Image (cartoon, rainbow over all chains, first blue to last red; front, side):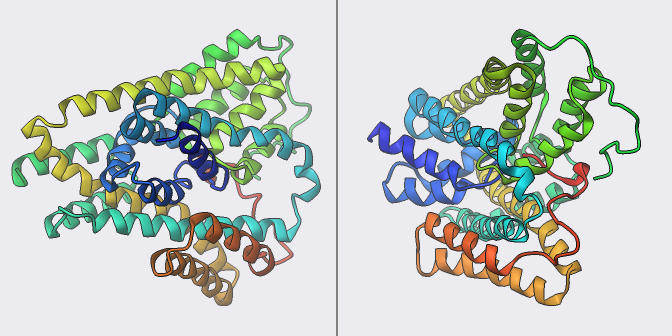
Length: 169
Length: 217
C-alpha cells in the first residue's frame, strides 16, 4: 500500500463531493479496485461513524483505521480537513455569483449525481455476499426507522444487533 | 431566509472578541455533543455563536450557512472554518478545526479499534449479521435524505424539471453500474450538465432556502 496514493484517493474523494457521505462512491470504487478494502469495511465504517460523535463525515476515519491502521485514520482525517478550507476562497467570491442561475444548476447537478452514486453503493452493500432475505428485511426496517427521524440511530443499530444475536446466530 | 433579521435594528455585537483558546473550548463541546450533524448541530452552533455571545451579525452567519453546502467536502467543517476565520483569523481556524475534529476523530478511531478487537467473538459475529445489512438500509436512508428534498424542489418547478432530475440520477446509476466509469468522471459530467440543464427558474433563487431546512452533515 502506497501511503501517498492512499492519501490522494481520500483527498480526491473529498474534493469532488458534497456532504459527509458524498465521498463514499469514489472511495468505494478506488479502494476496492486497488484491493485495499473489502466491501464489508464500508458497512462497518458507516455503522461506527454513526455511533461516534462529530460531524457526519467522520466515518472516513473509521474506514482509514480499518484499512490502514492508525496511519490510515490520520491520513483520512487530513484528507477530509483540507477541501473544506476552500470555503475561504468561496466566501470571497460568493456574493458575486450567488444568484447566478448556472451556479445553482451546477450545484444541483452535483447533488443529483451524488444521490445516484450513493444509491449504487447502497445497492452494492445490500447485495454483498452473506446477506439474504432476512438481511434485506433488517435493512428495510432500518431504512424506515431512520427516515421517520424519531428513533436515534444508536437505538436502530442496537435493534439490528439484537436481531442478529437472537435470530441470525 | 426567515432568520435573517432584516426587521431588527442594529445587531447587538459583543465587545470582547473571542480568543483562540475560547474557540477551541467551544468547538470541542460542539464537536463531542453533535451526533450525525444536521439540525441538532445547527442549533448548538447558533446558540453558542449568536444567541449566547452575539459574536457576529445574524445576516452574515446565515449567509455562510447558506453557501457552505457548495463547498467541497463536509459542510460543517467549512462552516466552522469560515466562522473561526471571521472571529480570530488563522489562529481561529486552527483552534476551531482542532476543537471540532480531534476529540471526535480520536473517539472514532478508538471505537474502531475496539470494534476490531471484539470482532471475532462469536456473539458479536451474530450481532454483526444484523448490523451489516442494517447499514445498507442506513445508506439508502442517507441517500434519500439528501436527494428527496431536491427532487421535491424540482417537482414544484414543474414536471419537466422533475423528469430531468430523475434522468440525472438514473444516468449516474447506469454509468457507474453498467459502464463502470470512474466516479470522478461521472461527477464532472453531472456538474457540467447541471450548469446547462438544471438551472432553476429565473424568478426565485433556490440556494437561499430557509436556514433551518438546510442540512449540514
